[in-house]
Length: 132
Length: 132
Image (cartoon, chains in turn purple, orange):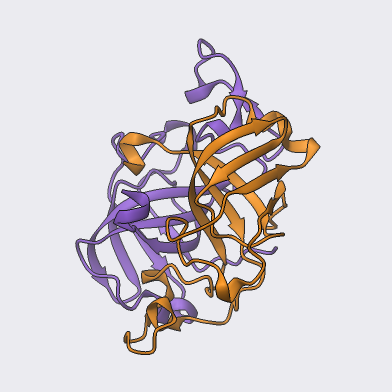
């Protein structure tokens, strides 16, 4: 179960502690830059699409099983699987973003809270019947 | 970027070719069985919750970059990242399911199209503001 980076996030966000906790909480626009080897997989993605981007949150602490939600000590601790904490056994980030523009194997997107240099591992379309 | 199984799917579905393509297309109920080492991460998940389950689709072909959507040759080929094909460079399955019952570190769920024995790698809550 070895993940392979298919691309990387280019973003003005560099400090995970200062990054928004969710994409719709004030994230800057960012670029998804895909490797040439995987560019054929992008065919069919269009400007204006909403897509799901899966990343590998490589700064996360994989030993964490319980957290205070939103890093607020006033929130009682919960299991990480009932939160969107980056710290979790498999730190896969799930981001729903809007495609603003496409330039070859680079996608310009809105609402991505991942920091610069975060590896991209997958992209999926939003399915209205399943994801609503 | 090494994924770790945190649990496994127990389902009457055993043949990937016969499994529904999406959870809401006639999937049977299934159990998510978590390892004892990761059970603390489940705290906070309740019966009635909708959750996102991430799996590792270990029967997938990771070399595929283009597919006929829904395996129908009448559909023109597209890049895998604009489809929900299991065949893709990192075959992470993303499943939105309903929690019917909780029995210790076993969750009974509705609408899971993954086959029996599929490794579970993550669980996340549905966020209404992000996932709708």
